[in-house]
Picture 1 (tube, rainbow, N blue to C red):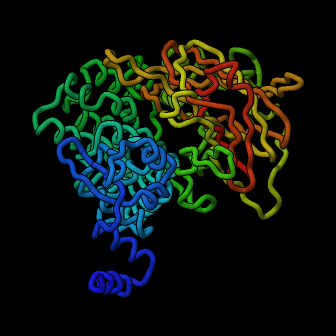
Picture 2: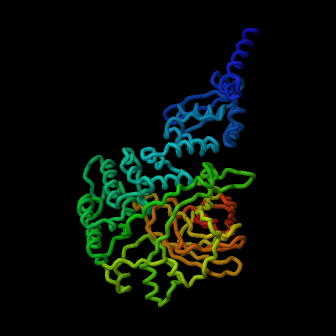
Length: 552
């Protein structure tokens, strides 16, 4: 008895802090009362631990313990799947000591995924911080391939890609990324590259590795690069570069190559296939501000996962840098046809090259470049926007997201377009509404196409008077999702504080969507609060993903 007491006293003296003592008890399996079986499908291992320690990780694990099978003398049994048993000691150490010893991005990504699944909030935040601190041109591609990254991490990844594009595509890990990550890079409008040819050559290198060094042909290119090709701006290349690097590469069909080459030499003389990007503008250079962290810290994307604070469901707010580009062709065409200075319906699209029939209506020479116009002049008949900033203040861009997580099935419904979606909302501060994010269509399981033509009418009214004060048509080639579609307004729309507005979204393209939404109060930085109403009456309201706002 005295000997056993001395042993017990010895370890308590050697491990003087609470964390050290608890971890010692776990390692030596002292007074354990539960068993956790961890498996990744190939390997399985059982770990003995303590219920009172494990239950503090999250309500999910607490519920698992409460409902677990129990045996006398051993305690309860729970199972954790889809995790390498070699990584579970990291979770155990965190449970007992609040400490995580990560060594690789791969470990951080795996633990972050498990943290999301079992809602271990603090562990997930630690993993995100580790990922953010170890982001470079090699690790970014493994992170990009991770599904369900969350808006905060996604915003930072896009910022890093934009700032360091040349280094990232020259990285040895670039050729290992998947098709969706490559497509996300190519869809960005602002990249730090010398010209579009640099991207084309990177895509050819990626395709060569994926095709095991075998020659490409249009069929193989469509399989390897289906959702990527519509984002490559072949019309931004010179005719010489296109002939030398693309025409004979096997990326495109002969018809597509011919149409592009004709338009590079004689713009507008041949129609461009729908599968080819019509944007002939060079990509813009990215701005310098680092997004995300100035107002919301590392907790942003975890708040998005519907963590409850004070009994409220909280959605995250993400900063993003955007640039609104004027579609001068459409504006001029409508002015000429209707004889109006300001069109009743504005048109937003990423296609900036001239379509042959639009040129015929405009009666313009195809080789004359578009005039540089001030976007404020186009909407000169619109009422002057009241300023929401004081002298010396700056506007801050935020993304107010209002959808649920896909796992919350009670808020998830399938909807079919065409359909009209009315949405009422109110904010507690006066802001500029500069755009929205909507959900993209879900592809059919047997479909081979990876993109579709989206068409959405956006109209905004005052809810009480029904006064219409903004309208826009958005059309573009969009990747199937579900993922988000960014729609930037042609001019900022002033939303006044504590006043209800109605936004009507008319989805015209036939197809299927997944609507994930609920009545939500969205809390953002700078004391911004947004309220959304009447979700039950129209399940399609989940197709509005976010409001993109500028605020003081």
